[in-house]
Structures are given as structure tokens and as C-alpha cells.
Length: 86
Image 1 (cartoon, rainbow, N blue to C red):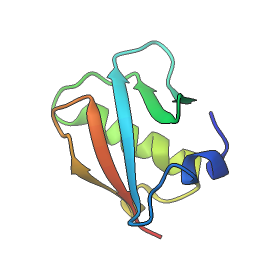
Image 2: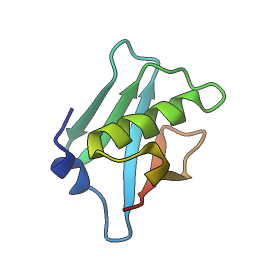
Image 3: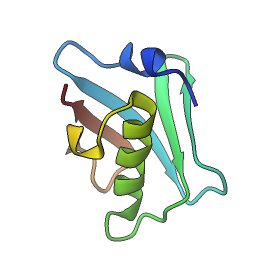
Image 4: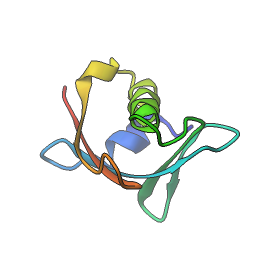
């Protein structure tokens, strides 16, 4: 998992963070590739389970409570946009 500083560097001035998600993998991970944040989660994309898993993974990486991370866009897409509340 990347350092919190590396993930925070991807957050824009308005607190938004774009993430590409891959659900249903064997091992969860957060990766930074070509300046993009990739989240791989075990949860299947059913009933928002994968979205919750991504939020929890981001919260752990940033050292924040999951309630401090809000999904703005992409509930049914692999491309998601979150707002990080400080």
C-alpha cells in the first residue's frame, strides 16, 4: 500500500480523489500507476459492497475514519470520484 503522503498528493485542491476500481480480486491493494490511484478489492460489485470496501481501503491508507470519505460519482462504474473531508 502506498504511503499516505503519496495518496494525499493525488487529492486535488477541492478534496477530490479519482480512483479506478477492480472488484473481486484475491488480494486487496492500493496502487499508484502512471499518476492514477488503482484500488483492488475482494468484495463483489453487489449492493454497494465493493464501494464500501474501496472507501474503507482509502480510509486506512489515509489514516482517516471511513466517514471522512464521501463518494461523489461512480457508484456503478469502475471509475469513481471521492471527496476526502479533513
